[in-house]
Image (cartoon, rainbow, N blue to C red; front, side, top):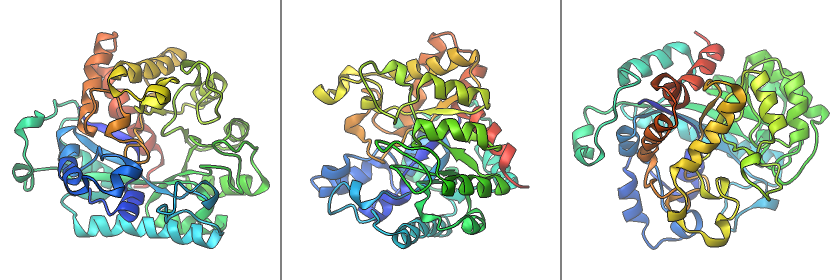
Amino acid sequence: MFLIDAHQDLAWNMLTFGRDYTRAAEETRRLEAGSATVQHNGDTLLGWLDYQRGQVGLIFATIYIGPKRRAMGDWDKLSYETLEEAHRFSVLQMETYHRLVEAHPQKFRLVGRRGELDALLGGWGPLDAAPPAGESVSASSLEGSGHPVGLVLLIENAEGIRSPEELSFWWDGGVRLIGPAWAGTRFCGGTREPGPLTPAGYDLLRGMAEHNFILDISHMDEQAVLQALDFYPAEIVATHANALALLPGIESNRFLSDRVIDGLLTRDGVIGVIPANDFLDPTWRSHRDKERIGLEAVAAHIDYICQRAGDARHAALGTDFDGGFSVQTTPREVDTIADMQKLASILSQMGYTSEDVAAIFHGNWLERLYRILPE
């Protein structure tokens, strides 16, 4: 079944570690074995061959930057201290995606208009078709017959947007979703740094609405989210965020409270669930045993959203793979992104219809994209 992944930090990995996503994940792991890259970010879950095997045909590809105060180490070279650095690093990532699709048009395409999305989907064929069997698909056999993977650009942390007047520049560059915060920004509170929308945050949202950007609240502090739900008139989603209620003992504004989930549902939003072990089990950090957590935990978060909504039209996937999550930190069934197809049978066993699974795998994100993409 065609799968849309609403969050992958591809450009950050390409620039920070030199990862080449035109390769298969297996090849990247072989080349990176024993390197500092694996020490810092684990083994990759992503690669073009794995997208083909898992029918991952569309990705929300991020432009991610973090502040220097939250840098992960000296190697974290895209962390910024000034707004000019934030802008420069953000532009660099957008340009990285443009270079990727220009160099490999048979493998990757930018999607910023309805016609481009129509063409991409038409190339993949029936969206509910079964994926190819992983072991029978080789890189050589797919070189001439595989399908391009679509990239919809998503800004994760808007500090690189120096003023609302620059929003036209980002829209013209292919950006269609914006998350104002990662940690706290001049726009609002963020993960581990609470705070409301600021006057600059309200100005940013006004400008975003004029262009019809989708607002991504994934890393925004709850106070700012609640304000945005009341203020922002265009589409609102959480591309990658799990339910706080299923994580007993956790007190973090990185997860979605019932109040925020219900607010998103009221606004007809979509929530992309993260299949990362420490986002699924609050005790996982203490034992870090991959085998103890399965994809049924991912299904539980999807089900929680669906039960609150009363339907399957608001839950989806946003893996955040390679953005801090690796083979070592994902459920036991997951070796590459292709293994997310295994979630379909789990949902079916829980009573979800094929139409429900299709909505969760791709339909819910497609509906929101078609609402905002220009012709």
